[in-house]
Length: 478
Image (tube, rainbow, N blue to C red):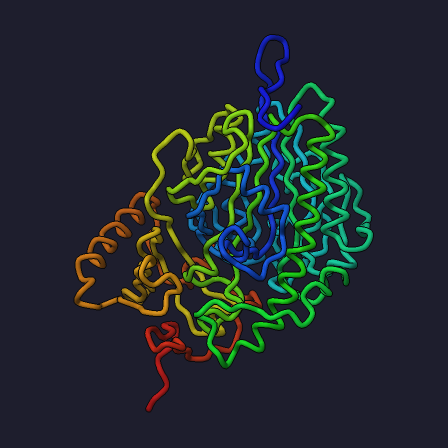
């Protein structure tokens, strides 16, 4: 079936769509050619963007691996699902994404990184452990690992076999080939399928992409975002070359997946999603990694191609998309009921929020290292407003200051804007039942006081532009 053709019909009824959900790790929205990054070499992704609905304001509500993935699987925010930080085990209090699709008659599959089993020892003890069936939350076909970043020596478990196996070569390519086999075998079945392919790159380590992709960026001039301080640009260039090499390799993964849909003649009635769990600062604002409320950390690419419903041309979705919105939106496309436990919205059937909700209930790892306190906030195309546990902290005019180099919090000219956003944030907290408690209360609830990522040496940090400072600790005496 050609892309854009009518969906298949079975027994007089339109066939429900198949789903291929591609989840990458740490791929920020800005690192796409279609969003203006001239460093990126990903022509297949650009072609996909030209055929998809692009959710231009997709944001990772809690921009770090486990909380983001828990929100994807539950349709809930972190304070509700209980995964406030990495390696806390998800213990669902409602129906999960895999369970909802399974109950709806879908064949479900999961390949790649999971990171929801948790490590109760607080020292990554389960990251390479076998994940029992009752912790897979509805996914049947299973070739996964809790968490590994050894992309060229990547462990996984298949089905109910507790013996570890290893992917051949660079794991993203091997996992993609397995996904293609799943797609082509499932295409012949009567029931539709939902497949999640969860790829580890472009998350660090950055120097481990296959050589042919690394060579594409050797010695290449890197064009930096203006908010990367000049004194950090040499360091950033080294990191970014490896990051872009991983991205180029993943573009090959996308090519293989899309070709498999074409070969199986199901491209037209398959919902194909490409996204990420969160972004990465890459030394914008002088910061490493994620966890923070700035654009490079929170914004993610989200492309949704479904020719049978949306045709084959690029469209833009201007409303905000938050991580918990993903589950109900996909269920809505499948014609399946949204569980009452879900806090997100089906963005194709209800009015989207104008703002995305941002939260870090528990600072850990690099957030503690740089001295950042717990926060809540809102992000719209026009503004980002963030309140730390100590009070109002950040306010940006995202249209006039897209690189967020001029914090306007407390600026008299923006008094009315800030007051409006303060009221909106208070209303959102009430709606979500989020009391915005001190971090130690959530750590106590999770029984995570012994976790190693909480026990990080803290340093006081100031903005390279002098417009913010960290709030977890007091400034050093002068």
